[in-house]
Image (cartoon, rainbow, N blue to C red):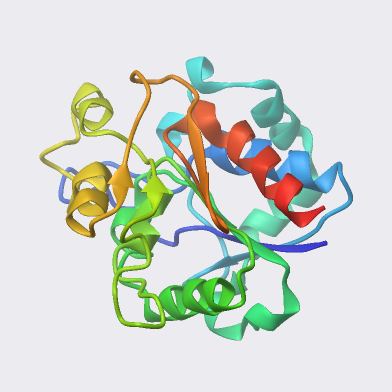
Length: 225
């Protein structure tokens, strides 16, 4: 069971002067869920090297059992500090791909040509592709083999407009995940703000927010079994 995790390399929150990156819980929960079940995990980013952590995901109120485990786990921290460059990844070597969120992916993974090709390659072979929270941003420019948006006609979820409004970044982000998915003709649905919610449509798994990362990880594992 070989799983590729793709993290953002982007650490600037628009022109606010604040930092962003990936959300620790959305990495840690799926990472340990799959690792503990025997998965061999590779972590990659567009630029390779150190993946930036969103400082807000490191605040005391964002801590979970999995983030606490991450902070004590030097081997996994080393993985985060030395990620593989996305260009050096061969999708054929993996059984599934998972994208954790955080605001970073809105800037880089949404437009990254290598990431787009990797998702298209996994999808063409009907391998599981998982995304949580802001990570569905990476699907923005991904196409099916017929040239239509990959999410067209698929049941999906992702970070909601009202959740973005609640964190006061609606006017900072380059686009809203919910709006983008709807514009790409996905069948978008959501639970209440901050509630755990995940959907499976074929080989595509999407989760709404940080609370949904465990649901996505478990659905990904079920698909791999």
